[in-house]
Image (cartoon, rainbow, N blue to C red; front, side, top):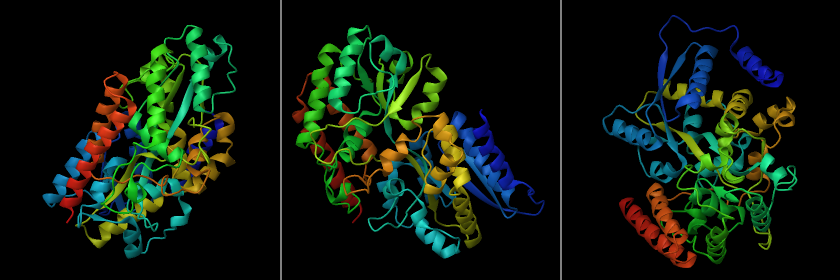
Amino acid sequence: MNFKQTAIFAAAAALVAGTASSASAVTEIQWWHAQAGALGERVNAIADNFNRSQEIYKVVPVFKGSYSETMTAGIAAFRAGKAPHILMVFEVGTGTMMAAKGAVIPVYKLMADTGVPFDPKAYLPAVTGYYSTPDGKMLSMPFASSTPVLWYNKDAFVKAGLDPNKPPKTWPEVAEYAKKLVAAGSNCGFSTAWFTWTQLENFSAWHNVPFGTKANGLGGFDTEYVFNGPLQVKHIQQLADWQKDKTFVYGGRDNLGNPKFISGECPIYVESSAGYGSFKAGAKFAFGASTLPYWPDVQGAPQNTIIGGNSLWVMSGHSKVENKGVAEFFRFLSLPLIQAYWHAYTGYVPITTGAYEEMKNVKFYNDYPGRDIPIMELSGKPTTENSMGLRFGYFAQARDFIYEEIENIFAGKKTAKQGLDDAVTRGNALLRKFEKEQK
C-alpha cells in the first residue's frame, strides 16, 4: 500500500471518527449480496464503516452465493414475505427486476419519499443509464460496475520487438501485433473473456450500432435483437478467420480464459477492468491496459462502452423507518470517498464524478497508469440509444444461446452470418415469451 492509498484509508477513517455504535436498539437493514472472497471483505468493510458513522441503522451484509443464486433467493424470500431490504442483482437481471411489479421500489422514488438528499447528475451517465428509465430516473443503485479493456503483456511485447508503451488501438493493429507475437514464440496472439459482453454487446456500443431495437430494450418489452448486422457479422467472421494461424484463440465462456493471459500464453487479452486484481496477483510479468479496440473504418468510432457488474435493488414490504435506512446507506455509498475506496481496491469504476475527481486529486492514476481507462471509455462521449445500456428479458438465458452459436462458428459448423442469425432468432423467441408474461 502506498501513501496515496493510505491517504484514502485515513480519510475513510476520519469519516467515521468520533462515532460509535449506540447500545440502544438500531434498525437493521439486510443486504443480500453475491460478492465472495476479497470482494466480500470490501463489502463488509463498507457496511461496517456505515454502521460506525451513525447510531440509527445497522446494515447487515449477507453473502447468498452466485449472482443467480442471490437473485433466486431474493425473489423466493419476497414471495414468502421475508425479502431483504437490499438485493444485489447482476446487470443482466435488470429487465427481470423491472418487471417484478410490486416487489421493488425504484431508487428515485425511495429517495424522494424519504427526503434523503439525492442528485442524479452526480453519477456517471454511462453507469446509471444501465439502471435507469429512458428519461433518466434511477431504478437501482449501481454498485460494482466495470467495463472491458485491453490488457497486454509488456514483457512479451519486448520479446517480439514491439514497443511496450504503444499497445494496439484498432482491430487491424491487434491482428498485426498478434501475428508478431506468435512469430516470436507465443502460443496465441490474443484472446478474450466474457465473449458475448465484450465482443457483441460492448462491441456494438463501442461502434454505435444497435444490439437490439427500442434503444437496446430500454424503450420497451417489445424489443428485438439485431446483433446480426453487417458490422457484427464482419467482426465475428474475422475472429473466426484469425483462428487459423492462432492470431486469435477462443478462451471459452465467461472468464475461463483468464489463465491464458496470466500464464503468458496469450499476450493480448480483452477482459473486464475488474480483472486487474487477479492479474496483479497472478501474472509474473509487467502488464498494461489500453482501450477496447475498434474498427477504424466505422465512422464515429469509438463511441462509449457499457458496464457490467451489479446494482442494488430496494425490495418492498418494509417500514418507512427501514426504507429511510436504505436511503441513508445509498447516500453513504455515493460519497466520493467511499467510491474512491471501492475503485482503488477492486478495479470497479466509481459511480460518481466526485469520486473520480477524488482519485485524481491524490494522483492515483499517476501511480497506476491505465486505471482510469474504463472511466474514459464510459464517459468519453455522451451516450446514445446504442450505448446507454441493455435491457432484455431472460437475457442470461439468451447469452447461453449466443455462446452456443458462437462456438458453432468457431468450430467451423456455421458461418458468422448463419450463427448470428440463429442466435437472434432464438433470442427473439425468448423475448416474445417474456413480453407475453408481462401482459
